[in-house]
Every structure is written in C-alpha cells, then in structure tokens.
Length: 264
Image (cartoon, rainbow, N blue to C red; front, side, top):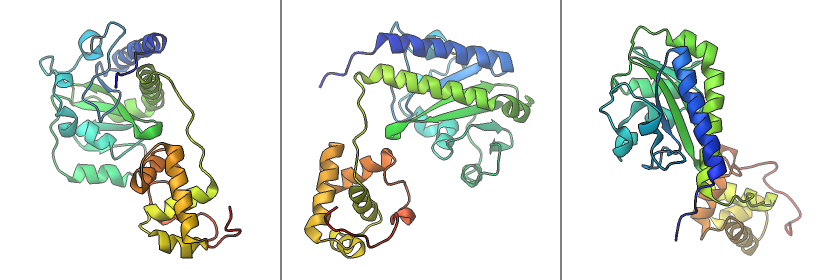
C-alpha cells in the first residue's frame, strides 16, 4: 500500500513551527533541540524539502551524534524513556527528572539509576500525546550543568509545551493524508469492551451487565466493525487509544453493573 503524499500546506506550517521551537530554545538558553514526531517511529521529521529537520534546522550538543539515523536511539535515550512515563512537561538536570509537582512516574525513572546524557547538562522535555496513541516529544537542552533549569521551567514550560503540541499535531496531520472522524460507539458497546479489557469472558460480561451472551458478542463484534479492526483484542486496543475505555480495568463499570433494557 502506497503511503499518502504529505499535505504540503500543513508541512510548511509544521516547518514554521519548527523555526519557532528553535528560536524559543535560543531565547531561553536551551539552544540544542531534538524533535520526535512519533517516538515509536525511526523516521525523523522532515521539512518541505524532504530533508530531516535535525540536519537543516536543529542543532545538538554533540554535532557528531546523528541520532536520527540510529533506529535504536529512541529505545536508549532517557528523555524518550521518561516521555513514555509522563505526559506533562518535565525538566532534567544532574538531580534527575522532575516536573512542577511530585511525580511518582518520574521518581520511578530516576530510581532506575544514572542515564546516558549525550552531553546534556540540563533540558526541558515536552511530550505531546495525540489521539490514536501517538506520542511525540521535543527536547530543549544545554551542555551547561549549571543552567538554572527549574527557573526556566517555571517561566517557559507552558509556552514550550504548546509549541510541542502544535508542531507534533501539525506534522502528524501533514503526513497522514486524508483525515477522518473517529467512529462513534454506543454506551453498551463501550461497556462490553471495558469489561473485556478487564479480563472478563463474554459469559461473565453477560452476567455482569445482565444481557444475553449473543447480545454481548453482537456488541463486541459491532464495535470491532466500527473501529475497522478484526476481533476482540484489536477492538479493545483501538478503543483504548481513542479514549473510549481508558487504560485501567478499575473503571470497567461505568454506571450500574446491571442495566436495562437488554435490547440497547
């Protein structure tokens, strides 16, 4: 299947935002920038000319580190690792990772031990979580370990986070081709998928929700059809990325466990 051609208007808008990202870093004393439009992908963000922005616009602390050409870099980089744990902006210094409030997720990352800094003395990292489960990230860094990153974070994290979100969303739209509205699931379809995500069998869901076994299977199958996936497991995964069922089995029951009428 041939990939859709980039939307050149959206790509130009993303490149303009990339310039704003670089300018913001230079202004606040974090001149080195690394950007991932999708941390699950080894393909780096490119400009309108098709060249990686890491080559044409952004600079890194170690100019010899061509991280965008290393397909395993995202799995080793501590900043990307922490972005999987924390959706808010956070900062990095010799003391480790931190954010505006106590964060058990970042504490757990810090507890894993020293990280490879690739020459970074301090940094502000802004993850960008998008619909469909995509996570992007922008890192603004300096080689100076004495840089007062907490003060810079307090003053600029909101501005930087908005830039990161705008860039990742705009770039993602540029590369996605035609957009489409998410499918609409019924309350009963969502309820059945939530209990399925909690590990319940169709028979158990039937007893919990008080509808017949064939009706449970009908709702799960219908949800999978709407989500354009094949089968129960894929329907659960896709519904979770769209925010229909959340990421925790603890909220499986939305509303009363037994609801009528069964024909819903």
